[in-house]
Image (spheres, rainbow, N blue to C red):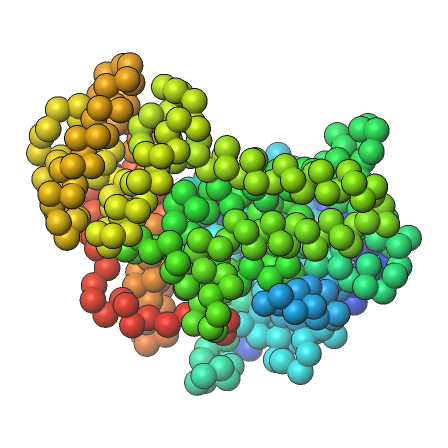
Length: 490
């Protein structure tokens, strides 16, 4: 097995014209300490535990001593933040170290929180331990749920004070992705009317990530169509598990359809379609039920800045495909959550799905626990009904819903046990609730005890498994969890 310093690399982004980025070395992190190392992500690079965890990892993650294959740079991009165009954003606290060829593909390696860059806009370029723990855990939780996401390789901290609402320990997350290109990268060149470089960026994405598009009659249109499809599928995945991103600015949208930039995120506890997880989002622009529409808005921005490469009518037609693609993907996921997959066309179950969500809203039912408990319900009433009824303010409302659900269930062939197993495979028992992350953060900050971070990392890698010894992590959140506040500084 290679060591971190011996990884095979190619660093294709660094071979683009220098207008795409600025060379920037990381600011060393004084006296760093390892919070967590993620062996599952390390295997993507071809590393095993013996070659991964050690002084080389701490040196790389802290930016104190980089392997020879690293060519650190900060990329340039623009973006729409809360609907307002900002012509210069860029990697203000992230550095792309290079691109590693793993056993099954390429992975860009990035440090988040490694200090100031030319795009920091008077900020310090640092990340704090609190927000870094949240990103580290959630990116791996989303992977465990089967949702496209950036990955987290490692997390290190330091006693270096970083000032947000208070002084907090500094931290760096080592992130992995096949590509970190965002919608905002395209906005950068369109705003500058540098259409040749806009074309070069599109060519880079096609050649780097989707070479199959090169042989299509209109590769740039095919690129837009692929991004629309991936984004529609991502939104369907988010909505099905109750994930709230919190800050869906166009510069936080991945061109590959990955979940990118975990800031003020949250998973729904009690179902509330209009839930706002970001306390900085005073108008509710990025509320839970707005996410699919915001994604379309961002795709419209992307299509508009790609127009120098596209036929306008063809771009409009591609955007019109988003809504039916999202609807189909979402209905399919929700039909599977109900245990009805493949038993009839998904469109016929749309009224049942909508009625179920309305009931959850009215009864303030815990979203994740409802679906998991439902996964154990049989065609006939049994003890599983009692656990489901206990989630409702009015158990009679649950009984009425179950009656209608069982009528629909009668049309599903196969054994109850087979259906229940299939439902448990799509309805997670464990999610990264805010109070779980908060408990891990408090231990890390107060006692430099990282055991809870690593326990959650292992738990969330297998969210659909029972894990009886950790079953208490699936319990309803405590009352104090409602007071947790996450904002754009989180």
